[in-house]
Length: 292
Image 1 (cartoon, one colour):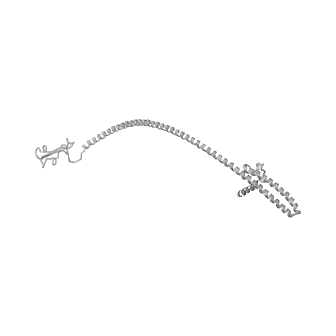
Image 2: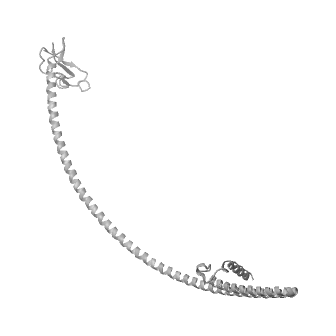
């Protein structure tokens, strides 16, 4: 019953839009593009003609009833009620038939659509499966190609590295040769500079030595004023007089090294008398001076 009511509402809703439209005029057909609504449109068109025919019959009968009203109002009401009931039953039968046809068409269309959907689903699944297989094959091919390129690039890289190492080795040898050559040149130049500096320093030292000797000779000739004596070593300087003195056979407690340490001071000396112990416990002091 609910299904019949829904379809009835749908029909009467569409009726307002379709009742004044010619179903053969596709340019103004609101049901264009839908097989189901096209069928409904045609059914409503039939219903429209039936309604128009019924309206004409009603109008004719109402006219007849109007004529009868003048003679008998009671008979007219009875006849009017009969005619109304007849028309209502006919209209209801037409609507019920139309709803049944629509339901059948809907079921038929639904089945067709489900079949098409299922077929499309299977077709799509098959296409996806085929595409997946093709994609896997392409991926495998791509992986193989990538592996080949990686191997080729690795080989090229290895060769390039070997070449670079060879160049580095050659370059290192060349650099070592250059360094050795430069080192030899630097050492040679350094030796030349050292030799030149040594010669220069030797000349300078000779000059300083000569200058010092001159200063020493000058200083020997320039003694302080006054009377004094100096220990003599060899001959006395000019202006000095040689004076010698000694003490011999000096009695000692002992003549070992704890008591007598022999030493020479130029021409002067301290020593044992004779050699130590030769003449007993004796020592001697010999002084040689230059005085002025």
